[in-house]
Image 1 (cartoon, helix red, strand yellow):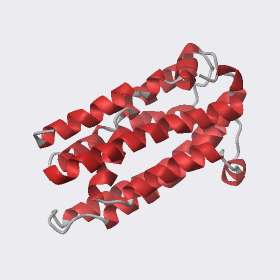
Image 2 (cartoon, helix red, strand yellow; image 1 turned 90 degrees about the horizontal axis):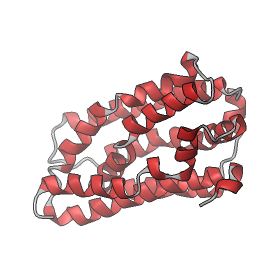
Image 3 (cartoon, one colour; image 1 turned 180 degrees about the vertical axis):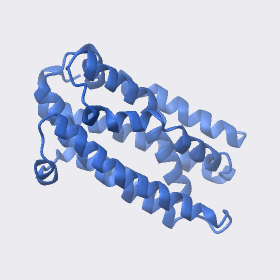
Length: 224
């Protein structure tokens, strides 16, 4: 990677190669092949991810280099606050599937899902560059994925309520976050780019692992 811009391109290539839209679970979602019970299982498993994203953002904020503008920490703190609000939006999605907040909060996700989230958190703790690369990989497909999910909920599963779609509509508008990550990534020092790309690949693998965990518990007949 000879230029800072190539780091962004390399991360996007890594994401594309293991795109979540290619995962059997999301392909089944888009084909209308999931049951309501399987959607509910996904909602409960993914809640663990949603609840932990604010903490990952906080880990990145803690590791902002002194060389960056003083306002960087504030920007990241605001993003962490937004992510905490997104937890409530996910609770509304779960509610549209008949899952109460109490059921969500008491649910214990699979070891696969917990390990996947732990891997992203540990990666963010390695350094600022690792954290921003992991989050860029984590969020870069969210607009496309959220649009696909929302369309599928209406077309195949009859879920049209505001609660069913509010989380996904919010994440279709993810470009503001993506611009921020790209700006940071373009300024990563050459000596840190390899570690940043490795962190992005860890995040991509973890996201696929989350869906693997959902399938292991709720979609055994569809396992790849």
